[in-house]
Length: 510
Image 1: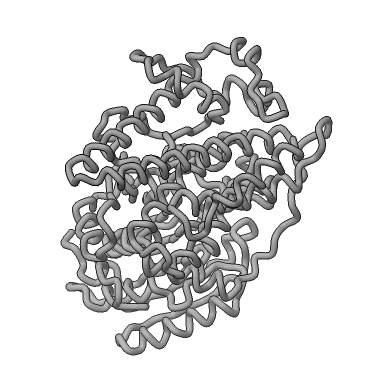
Image 2: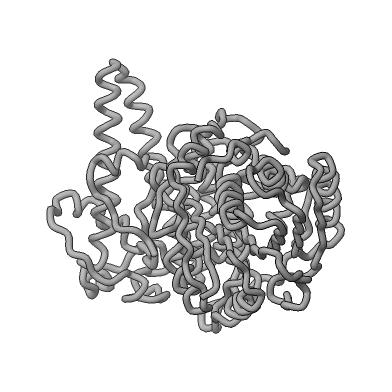
């Protein structure tokens, strides 16, 4: 399908992969990056760094989480590592992640030294080495603090937080900034843990979902500056146009109404494309917005109706005030002869719970609507593992990549970046780190896990075949170099220096 110019317009309206241990791969990961640690707590990452410099062979074994679960037998409670406990475990269990992390660190260090030598910047090299050392220390402190929090050691955890705060700066390096968000999350979780001997972790009460002005502004900035949401909109709209080809009546059910962006950005672009497509004209477009705030959704719909009038398009907008778990098939008004599409942009992960019941129920209701296509865009990372330390390390790796991309896109003291980091990404981080039970809604999972969930619900994959078109779009929206788009088993994945960030997939009823 030929690229649609409107889909590229940025101003027309307002399970983990294997580790690439080569030096070329290491060059893509600056020091703050951590290796992909899905289902691993990395509790023994730091003590073995020196030892593994001499290791030349690597054996893959089961993950740390699977072998030690959530226990803290390696941690002495006083901030020290128990040598007896370490010696009692097979060290080969940890060498995969240790070796990868060490090699990436050494490779980047060597590259920085070479560049400094070529430009004669001896003093600059010393500064870089000092900064790298500071960030390595910050990594160690974060991991040690996460260990103390996991072990419910409030005394030592509080002491480590006090050491962390002066170096976890909101306007520091990219890793210092991401560390500041994790410090907030660890502090919140430490305040809620039960004492030793108690069962489980105290879960915070359900936090209000009220949208503040700061959050609204941060969301708009993320949409305008970062490619993640726009990528989801582009893939969704291109897939919708392909599914609608030859149809004259279209009905889109938008779950979450594209995050509540005030201007209905995604649908304005779709309307423009539908109004200018060749062939049979569109007779009728209907959009049903599903969400908790009917007033906000209707305001978006009113704006879309005015936009449709200007295009001379027959448009109808309706609202279903409901969260996804309470949505019923009869809430959606279906008309005979219309093509139905269900659109979910960064929404369904909020329905994932400890048990599969809630998500399965929602997917079953969507399946009963018999949509021609279900478009699913989700964060591509494992932030819903059963163990806190595993989630912590995965989140640290994932958000370090995002903050590094922000570092490349905006100047150091740009207040827009601080707003995005502190009022948008920080909220996600704190929810992943500090919350449990129903309060934890940021339950991101990898695309392979979504494939299994969708297959169990009866959906079949509808491969997305537009990787060239997507790469053209990425070049036209003029984001900074470093963002990548790749095809993975019929899905499109947006990444930062090959680190997956967001995955888009399409599904049809079997």
